Length: 269
Length: 272
Image (cartoon, each protein chain N blue to C red):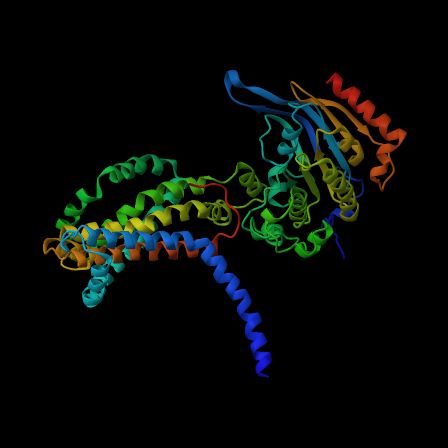
């Protein structure tokens, strides 16, 4: 199966230096008005390299979801700028440069799995790049369940459908907001491993919010640690573990050292 | 050859027997209860020697069905049409208004109180007014049947159209879906369970509306027949007419339930 999901069009390959997929510079995000004004993010700056897998970790209230939502044009920024492949988040959203996976699978209950995957092709102009819904359901391990309604699928399977739906527009970037947060640990481990496989097969840039230290370390090439009140960048560290990673990597000394470091950092937040 | 077909008949009839048994198991208590009540009814009428014009027994009612088949039938159709057209018109207006309300806060603020006010006027008080305006034809009956359907559907439809989870609306936003697409692909679909809850209510109340309208001033329809039979002490005919009206409501209710089962195949959250 040919899955050229990172296919960026004719111009992208010709560029010389690897331009970052996402550039965030000096971003503030505030909620509320007047006395209830609450600063969710303060002066956040970072570059996300094209094709990388970055996990965002931080204590609750650190604005990790808010950062992801600001990049996705779901919350407005008060200050600073965000560029997604050189475009504003609004234009990038319109051009279907990124997809978003929510914590809840948000499948439409009256649509079968395959019809849920097809939804992005039916709305918003459908985008230019049409993925192959059947192939994507196979990619996420749901071959044979195309006709199943969301009610008939387990929580893990529903989230797989949501991932296939996110990939159907062939996005350059996948924004994932605690997508496995509501799943049991066994299902979560399995999906973590499969997500890495999908990332390697598709070459999509993935930005993945989580509150699980092992998940952040296992998935990310880099871990972005945010501190709370107000949300700001605490550390942006590389995870030096070889790819492809298997779940057993979590039993190695290197992995334990990384998670220990992250835990320590998290306590200081 | 004969043996083979006998064996086939056996295997074919075995599941059918099982099915009949299961059906009786499920519906048996209801059937027994109904038969019991009818027998009790007949027993009371005989036992206490109740005159037929005060309370006819089931046998009298059955005979009335037989003797007045033509009258009942010719009066069934107008009521059926009024109820059906009223059902269609009342619900259509309610649905369209609900769509307008969901899209325009101003419209909702302007018209919702009026809708509530109209709903508070007893239908029996509105009926003469409409008969005065529209005369003795079908129109006032259809309007009254529609009016009685209107409010529950409006309220439920507004709720249904708004019952979309914020996460789903965010998804539509990420997908750059237009308002129209979000409406058509998400809101309409997720309102269906709410809509059908209202349509089930409307399917029985529209018959009530049509009959009440026929009481006010009409020389046709089941409502008129009820009045006529009452005034002439033709109690068996009165009972037969009432049963026919109830059957009409059951028929409409079944049609709505059938449509619901066909259209809503997913498990729905509690709606009522």
